[in-house]
Every structure is written in C-alpha cells, then in structure tokens.
Length: 106
Image (tube, helix red, strand yellow):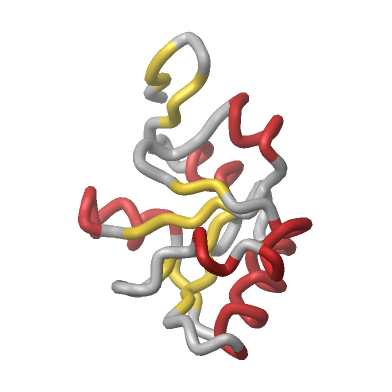
C-alpha cells in the first residue's frame, strides 16, 4: 500500500485530492479544506462518490480506517494513497483545518 506523510500531502497543495473516510459528524468538526467525505462505513456502497480521475489521498483520524479504505479502494482499481497519522497528525504538524467556526491554524 502506498503511503504519504501529512507534510508531503501539504506540499502537494490544492492539487491533491483528499478523501476523508471519517464519519460525517467527525468531518463536520474538523477537516482539511477541499476534502471530500465518504465515510468508511458507507464506502463500498458509495464508490460513485469517490473521485477517480487522480490519485486519492485517503485520510481518517489516526490512520487505521484510512489504511483499510486505501486497501479496499486499490482492489476496486483506484490509485489510493494512505495519509499516515490522519487529521490528528495533520493538525499536530501545524497544518490548517476547517471547523464550523472557520479556518484554524497552529
């Protein structure tokens, strides 16, 4: 399985396609700007909602669900890349997140 660090993902900028597989309530609390949310619990039934045009950078809270999602997406023919450490590591590394109150930077 291909993996990428949060810093490597940040360097890709707005061109990166980020698929967040956390549940909707988690995604609503905090997310990476521009990320698309398809919860792991519905991923198998929602493949039409998954962008297929470019590599997918798959993210969750800490890396477990995104690893499972990445493996599944690879079996379905997607070019998927697991984001190590998830949004928790993204935030710890100082990258901005979007919350209901707006953008939060560290």
